[in-house]
Image (cartoon, rainbow, N blue to C red):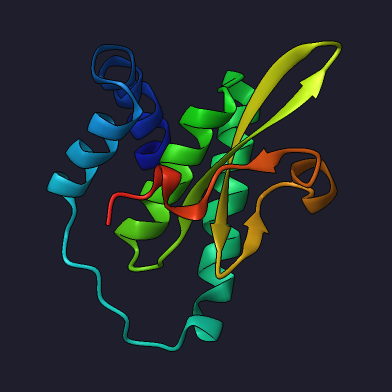
Length: 130
């Protein structure tokens, strides 16, 4: 838990100074080599644990969706689990609203899929670096 809180606090600075993509590149430069010793289905309990932890901390600290998605993506990646950050928009009262979320094999993680479906997602590679 301390690791997730630490990353959330640390990520505030580069996100403000560098923006999303450069912060994501910075995180990738810090990564350890991911290993997959088990099939993805065997990792589901670990995925669920990470999602619950990040959601709990982010609710408590009132973290916005982009930071939440970035830390969830990073923690999954750190544990050797591939996922993708998705970004979408919707129009509400003549205003555009944006939202970021994390998907793993097309499945929305840590949020209600019905909520995310309200947003028109940008192409999958919009927030992807590789």
